[in-house]
Image (cartoon, rainbow, N blue to C red):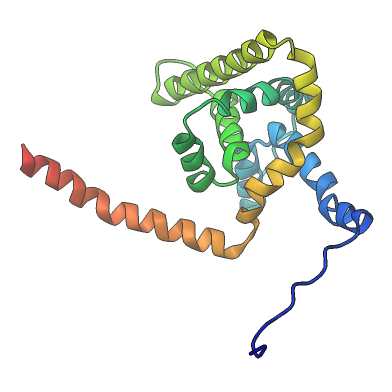
Length: 203
C-alpha cells in the first residue's frame, strides 16, 4: 500500500530559507536600477564600430546618469500605475514583452530618449513613448498621493522591487523562454497574413 509514496522534504529553517530567497536580491536590484541607463542604439553602434574597426563612439556618461536618475524617480510610480491596469493587459506584457514590465519600461525609455528631429515616424513614436511615460508616472504619483504614500511608496518599491522583478523577469534568463518566444513570433508571422486575408474576404 505504501509503495510509490514519496515523503515531502522538510521546510528549511528561517535563516537558510531567508538567505536562499535573498541570494539574488543584489543582482536584481542592480539590474532594476541600471535598466534606466541601457541604451540599445548606442550598444549597437559600438558593436558595429568594433566589427568594422571604425572609430569608437564616445560614451556619454552624463546622459546615462541622467537617464538612471530619471528612472529612479519614475519607475516606482510607473509600476504602481501598471498595477491598476486590467490583469489581461499586465499578463500580456509579462508574457510577450521580454523581461516583463521592466523590459517594457526599458523599451519606452529607448524610444523616448533616442529620438530624431522633424516629423519622421521615429519622432512620432518617441513623442508617444514620452507621453506614455509621463502619463504613467503622473498617474502612479497621483495614486500614491491620494493615499498619502508618495514618498513611502517610492522607498517601499526600491526595497521590494528586486524580488518582484526577479519573479517576473527571471524566466527570460532561460534558453527555453527565448525558444518559446521565437515560436510565438513565427506563429504570429504565419497567421497574420491569413487573418488579414480572412478580414478582406469577409468584407
